[in-house]
Length: 231
Image (cartoon, rainbow, N blue to C red):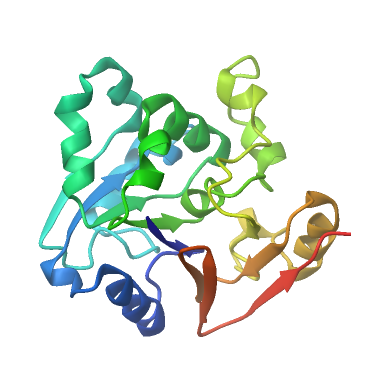
């Protein structure tokens, strides 16, 4: 599995080029599955999911001109036969994992069985946006805010501070984004959190992303980013 971990999707030509390099072919010749699950915990989650699928969200992903695009709904998978959904994942060139609530997404990636299968899919490109990126790291920097919209006795809430640990670093995204909901996503706060996270931390603005291949991390940026070490 190869990973492209973004703050705000395929937001500039450099990130688009990195995606095609990971795919090994043009986006227009590639197939993808879209995962909207992370957005559901929010009050207007269903509307936001539809906007993302229509290409109306400010995080370019579904609208890139894929040769084919399907929907992979994580919450449905435990009730389905494995042979009815896993082949589609195995055949896909890219898994597009949309943003939202990290804790909810992490739980359903694990509960659905997708997380278990990801390391075996050597040719798949996992493309994360915001929460979709943080979910594959060991620790969730958004745990406190995630709990504000989750039932506190849910499995997702009880494990809110954990990620899937598919990569050996953590992430802080949307640094400097002017939207009030990201007011605390500053480089200073990222640095402070990194000192106690126990892992190296990449802080990315919306023009930056990380490509991870065989454990090697490459930063792609037309904006601002930093890497902080834990104390």
